[in-house]
Image (cartoon, rainbow, N blue to C red; front, side):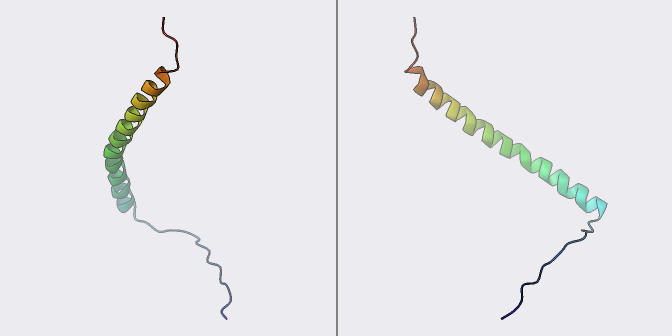
Length: 59
C-alpha cells in the first residue's frame, strides 16, 4: 500500500501578457452570462409577483 503524499504549491509562474489575455476573455465571457441571469431573475420576479399578488388585498 502506498503512503499518502501531500503536495504543496509554492507559486505559479504565469507571464503577465497571458494573464491579461485570460482576464479580458473572462470579462467578455461574463457579459452574455449577465444577460442570461438578468432574464432568468426577471422571469422569476414576474412569476412570483403574479403568485403573491393573489394574497394581497386591493382596494
